[in-house]
Image (cartoon, rainbow, N blue to C red):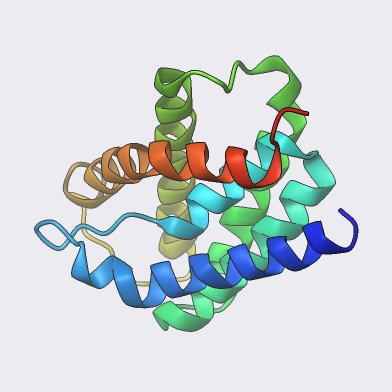
Length: 162
């Protein structure tokens, strides 16, 4: 990314920060909030490469750790690994269809949620045994649905057909 695209990218990441920290609380359904940082991570990792995905995952995960008040580094690790995997396999994934976009974000959210859960166990954080069906699955589904219009908008903003 050069010049204007870099400035646009930084502004979009700042917008995702606002969405995650401020807006997600007001659109929560039964306490379940979409993960806007994950949406940004998956989109840009699929469009770029594994290094970009890893770096963006570490940054967004660290931001999520800072603003969530959890143990610093858990989300950074989970998001970094997710970005690395998404960037690595992006060329093998059909990412233009809405169904595939939903599935990619849904599966990425489950992956991050389960990884965070496993890391929480090793750090002896209190975690619910029903975490998967009560939190991870609903958050993943909601995030997948919310990702669809955001992917469309980001694709128009950054990757217009010439």
